[in-house]
Length: 336
Image (tube, rainbow, N blue to C red; front, side):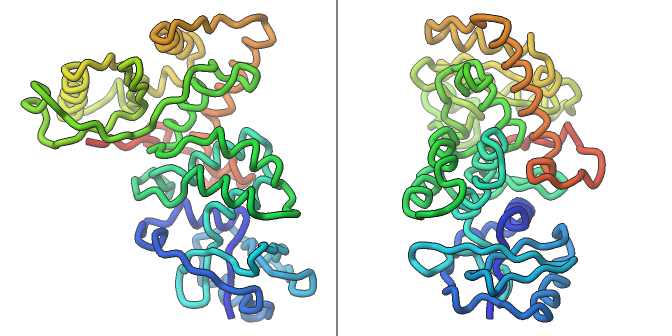
């Protein structure tokens, strides 16, 4: 018999799992294999000590639902009769990220669902601090599952939000910055074209003499206008070695013909600073991002604050209380 993590518990396990190899190995389990015994469920729950209780799990029928201080069961039915999942240990599984997104679409508002999509399709996990790992899901997978499944509460919202998710974010704050810049004006963003995140560029020409690798990976890239935005959480208090490395990254990208803009943590909390950066990007595209009225300006201010809040307080995405003060300077990891 199997025990299947779902809803917020699945998100919590997916974001805290350091073993990227687990995410690459997909399994399928049938409805009939799901655990229904309360005693065995609670025994399993006691082995997952790092996850918030009660654990949210999936069952296939109303008759199988169980509820206690340790476990809460929720009915989840798929069209195929199988649950796509990731095996944590023998007998304990986690619902696959694309199905978690669809399930959470019935529980979260649009902004939090969008942020969750960026996380599930990102290249980072969160376990106190942020760590890098392989991408386990994609926007195409989110869409495919939302289209395939029928009669699921939240399906309409999932279909609307999945196309707005971008693949490849490397940190929560990078997700926040991307959404602030590229979300439509009606949603509170600056309405800029969507960038490519963490795309490996081949280092060519004279720039090869400045860089040890064959590729360099900018945080946000607009290839058509040769523009790069780099998010640096430690912009104003980096060690000399880090400063030198970041300067070399900039030199390489500029030698390759890219304009490079650096955004720091302090700028993320300052609307005027972000607007200045957005105007530089907009000018490359010949766009005018001046707010049309006070309502649009207030919408941007609120959206910026909410996105930064989700980035710096990740447990709030799921409605969990913060365990401790967040480390607002640890939400990004530099890549080569």
